[in-house]
Image 1 (tube, each protein chain N blue to C red):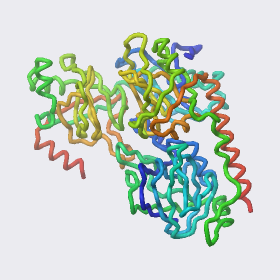
Image 2 (image 1 turned 135 degrees about the vertical axis):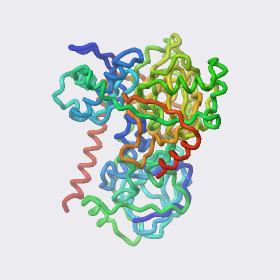
Image 3 (image 1 turned 90 degrees about the vertical axis):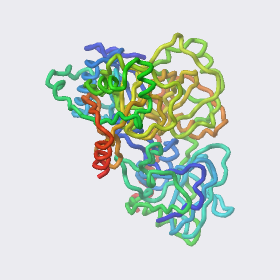
Amino acid sequence: MFADTYTTALKGYYLSETAVTVIFADQIGLATTQTITNINRRLLANPFPGFKAAVPAYTTLTVYFDPQQLIESNLQGWDNLQKVVNYVSGFPESSSDERSTAAIVEIPVCYDAEFGLDLDQLSLNNKLSIDEIIQLHSTTTYTVSMIGFTPGFAYLGGLDKRLFAPRKPSPRAAVPPGSVGIAGEQTGVYPLTIPGGWQIIGRTPLTLFDADLAQPVLLKMGDQVQFKPIDRITFNKLADADQN
Amino acid sequence: MQIKINKPGLLSTVQDMGRHGFLSQGVPVSGPMDTLSARIANIALGNNENDAVLEFTDAGAEFTAESDILIAYSGDGAILKANAFTLPADRPVFIPENTTITLSPNPSGYRTYLAIAGGWDVPEVLGSRSTYLPAKFGGFKGRALKANDKLNSTRIISIVTQHILKGLINEGIHYPKWSVARESFLPANKFTISVMKAGETDWFDVNSLKSFFSASYSVSVNSNRMACRLDGPCVALKKKRELLSTGVTAGTIQVSHEGEPIILMADGQTTGGYPRIGQVAATHLPLCAQLRPGQSIKFYEIGWDEAIKQYLHLMQQLREVETTIKNKFGDL
């Protein structure tokens, strides 16, 4: 079921009759994130006949299409799987220019105990003071390695090893929106009130997902992210400003 | 045209053919669970294929026509009745003002689609009229329908629909002899579901795969628009392995850490991290959407080439029906 291409090592498989997943690597990595981000951008700028959408993830790019239009196209390949894999393989590797132009998004976070529901537990388990946790979490520049799971949920790679923490044994029934959490080697922000098992260490007053906006999601794959500690008063001010 | 909901039933939402523009931002497609029945309801009216329809779950809903209306319904979740009079499915039906329609039980399925001339008029959110309940947006005010909600049709009515309406306007309920032969688009056996290999099918042990393709699975009461959960034999991986989250879609069969197979449906997430044992054929996904909790299915393995051939054939058949209706009513 896997298709090799003539020109490169890229492989892919059918996800459905109307989608093909192209595989770029077998593990998470900054270079892979950048490659997939760039290829996705090129694909959106140069769609093939019947192209509908693309979903980048940690190591894959899933491409959705109209199967009739694609099979009738003159793209190289004897079936839609080959056609998509060959087309995506045809894009050049990323250039260093593109890497340096990634946006840096600053996300203010209040790490007060009121919001950092699992700070005490994390402090105990990882043998760090709460100040050390805040310091480690807010001095790293993260990269969005994937958006998924729920609208606007960004998985951020680059977490300091000392903050690695497992998911909670049983997930919370409702995590408040804006909650900043840690799971395994990743950190991220909950955009909506949903059930979740990440260890919550703070909250941002920013809205990460708003369906009423033309651009509903604050972050996108490949973006650079930094967290900035704020106090409760600043949190309130920013929350009010964000509402308006 | 307008209706008023008297009883909303178990779960009733507005859906068009889905939200495809924001998948990369984690926004699911949504849309009808049974896309075939939704399309047939629109085709029977001369509507556009992406016009919004109402999705009713099971029987129990009731609504009143607040003006003369031209509707078509399709799907096996309920039989539409005006008093004791049964309205035929899969064709246009003219209903005069003040008629009350009830959805009475139909044991053969679970979901029914109601199209109206011109489509239901709700605002587009992120390029679609589909309701996405988990994030409370799209459709009718981002929620399921409630008693006393009033829904209107759009004023954009195709020439085909106008001609159908002209031929059916009457004092009472009126409909033509013809209908779209929905059954001809469906397999004779509705409880054997064709499944293709997925990304991680080879990760599962041989005995688990054997059991998956021979045992009966029944639809759990915990199923919803996001996922069809299955009760039956658990399946196991050859060895413990973690999958990095990657794109998933409607019909993807994920296996939870407990070994429970779960079919992702219309509101399913855009990416997932559970190993995938298979992918339900797109032509059979409407069968899954019509399963009532407790009903049993079996899985049957087919190849991708066969699945794609069947899907393209179905799309071609639907286009032919659409063209037939357009030719019949387009140029009077």
